[in-house]
Image 1 (cartoon, rainbow, N blue to C red):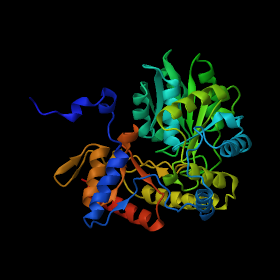
Image 2 (cartoon, one colour):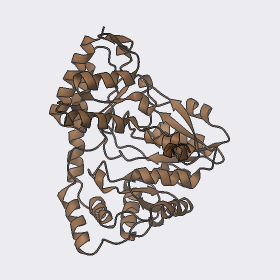
Image 3 (cartoon, rainbow, N blue to C red):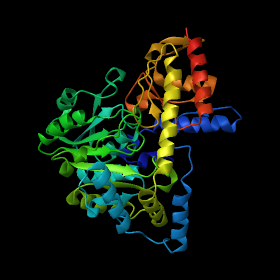
Image 4 (tube, rainbow, N blue to C red):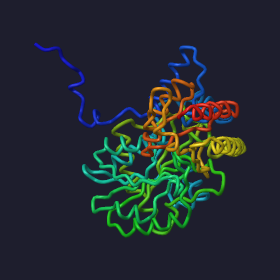
Length: 403
């Protein structure tokens, strides 16, 4: 009898999903650090601030008050109401509390939505560069990713004609991430209106609007596509508390939509995980109803860091950089450095470049290929000024050695 190979029992959909490069590069950086290397990592999209004290205290008080049991599947009514109120007032999204579904992070809200709306073979338009997890989520739900690419020359936003050309009678979702991870791109109101007109001309298309970075903006506050005429019924807006409130470890996200979609999303969540963490939701309630001074202060810090890292990147020959109007990422085009030799090794791809950068200069970045943007790298500036300055010094030194 042959030895049993557990890998032979894996499902085809699981086998088809690759490890996300962000996780792989971050893990490699941690391993080098553990070996004593002086690694500077700009890989993970996580605020380097602690969660504000008032939010932490609200969660502690909730635990002491007995919020240690199962929460309602769609979330506590008072938090759903507070989110709906904010979306109505600040985003002009006419959602009712019953249309809000709390989840274990925004990533689960995205997954819930895909499972609630996609049938096998339905097509989902992904606008590249896109967050690395999108493609895997779509495939897990039986969808077919259809990629529409845009580069630095168009500020990482495709034309509406490109999007229209990718649509078929199988198109079910357009995943819109504005502000964008990894590029920081923001779709302005005119661009969103053009997209809305296109979506409404299609008999079955919905928009999955990932707005997790909406509070980290530097030029003007982003517009929500669900606020445009005729788009609320066609849009599932996803957001969460991780980025704006520095609550990544709390895992509190949500979706907001019309009630029929919300009911389906809640049904999926009830099947997979049930309700989110009870006392974390009470912390989230304190966050969304409390003062925004610390949120604004964190945004001001990101703004300063954006200006710092962009100015340093602009001084490095071979690198083209678009200043991101939002988020805490910059997505420089390094294609001018590719095809060059590092010693006896020729760096042909952004993946090879990132591994070389980490191995030789102890600078951890993420290849743009992980986001559907080959020839670029993603740098997170959710890091200290010192780390940013050191990282850009190492990048400049590395680029200067290529021949």
